[in-house]
Length: 383
Ligand code: PLP
Image (cartoon, rainbow, N blue to C red; front, side, top):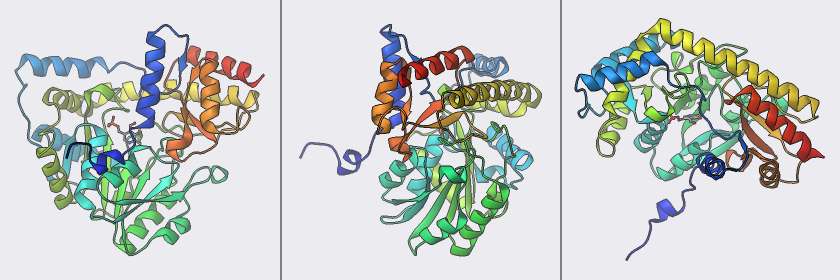
């Protein structure tokens, strides 16, 4: 019989991707719109990285790569995880993927059996629950609260653990809340993984974008239980290159690579050589990250000051480039508020699919001029 599978019919397409596409389409049609929707740096990829890609092309490095990535990049990843994250991993315990997204997708395919539960801290990045469900698992929401700065409460997490708990997903710095989890909280969560023998999935894709506090990789405490996921997109403004990476126990990494071998074969070879440059030309990359981080910090402060002047509530984010704004002054629901703001000329993502009800997500990975314009339009929408 013809038709679509139940599995795909029950999957929601990514709300952030959809809203951003809609905003870009309206702009293309000439609508005067400030888009605070994109989860991507507005900077161009650094020149030294682009040059490495040109070099790879000129040298004919244009063929299939091994499913787990080119050996040179896996070596560099092992070194990066050791140096920057304190994770003692060998190249065989690393994996290169088509974005951080594929690392997470393959991971859930690799570890979940039907009915396995995965604890997901809400508000969450929209893709975690969908990926879990797609792999036959059951996402179990554990709330983090605005009044607690969206920092997880390990006791609340503990209470959600059952005999079916297979994994806990942790994302610090967090999308969409911007929260940076303190080391002691991450340690407590790693201890829960050890005590109850489940996997800790640590999504560290925003690790370099921290304005207050420091980054801590919980895999240092539970190396046999943790899969650390990261990628080139946010740190090096390489969203379109589609390179992600992960490290973790060898058997899990091998299974994730096997999933790649039957789906995408390997990530883009040229992009892998470019990422190798981003990871190994440390001086140039450090300078780029410092520049971008300083720009985001200024934009965050500008946005938070503007919101506060308008009496709009938002928990101060310490990392990534998002703010969750309380939408109650605009409309009874976040969907209506997002619609109202769109009418006023600002595109935002309603919090619904992040389980951030009564909030919209604002991305400040855009120019100060755009942020000022957005604030003026918020003021008009409030009148
Ligand atoms: N994890 C989080 C929390 C993200 O926000 C994103 C992208 O928005 C990703 C992972 C995946 O990024 P990519 O697939 O572009 O590497």
